[in-house]
Image (cartoon, rainbow, N blue to C red; front, side, top):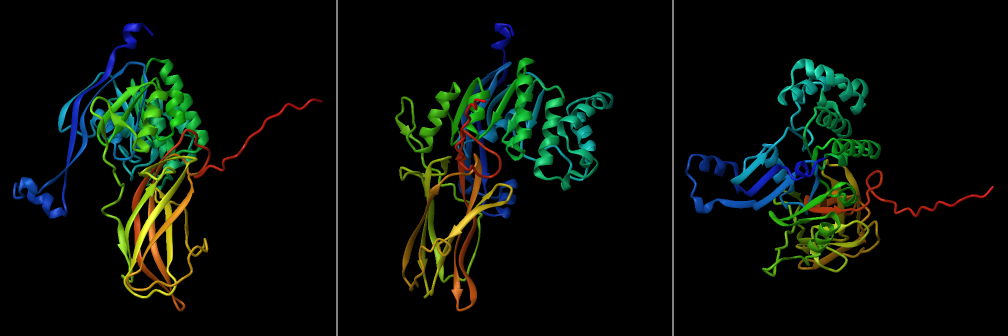
Length: 418
């Protein structure tokens, strides 16, 4: 590729801000739409705070940062899914985007009908899609499921078809947001091989991932976001090192000596219920240094903290926690009874602080933590307080193996002399 082509900007983002209005209830949104709600009563959330960046032709660029940093928001603005509140975005080239599962697909249509739907939206004629269809179906490799409505697909089948469409419609710019994390390891390898082919053709790739090994291996440059602010850009190693400092609260903005506020990752809309005999008053995660965090480096030790206040006599309370992935699959969990950690009674006014300390062995990605205080009154199981999906945690990984967790295998290969 010629040097002038290499430095040709295909995506330019200038001082982009994205502000969301937050409403306590649906009626507040309606009042605001008709100008009936006072402006000073509307809560605002800045998802992006004046971000500027340039991506050149032929680059593979990664965007990293913790949950809530603005990674997905900037991709949606670049692809036109969202409009910026302020700022300007210019894109020079045909974009194909693989964002959330389901985006751009009609759930009632079958796989082939969705291929034609997406191709038409990209500006292809039916004849052109006819020519591309065999390659798309071969890459997706989901067999006769292409004739079934996509609402019946597993997440793995869905991403196979979505990626096959995205990569085979001849985009000049490919944008991927974590979607490959739901495919099996063999399909992921197939996709990354396609990335390499795509890059050799002089095309541009922008992707978000918590798999730092992929970021390190495939990216020419990396942008680091935190709480809507662009902290920096540079080589993969430099930015990954900076990201790890962010995770432990040790990253400061240059020239301003300003640390970032801690985002506690709690879900204000968590499902909760219970009879009120006990209440979970506080909960958070700390890293191996004891620093509060919402992101844990895979392989490191972390602690989940929970403070519980008892309002009535409870003969044998059980303290529980569990992890789900973002698709709702229960991954792991335990409780104080299983661990034989606490088998005593609690009295009104007692306050207990419970900690679960363990090594992080889950794969890189986003997880939701649920908490509970339960117990048995004679033979009757009682729920005193439960919080479902109440805390979000990001696992940052530089090595993802097959499945949900890493067995931390030690592999040895030796020569055998015959």
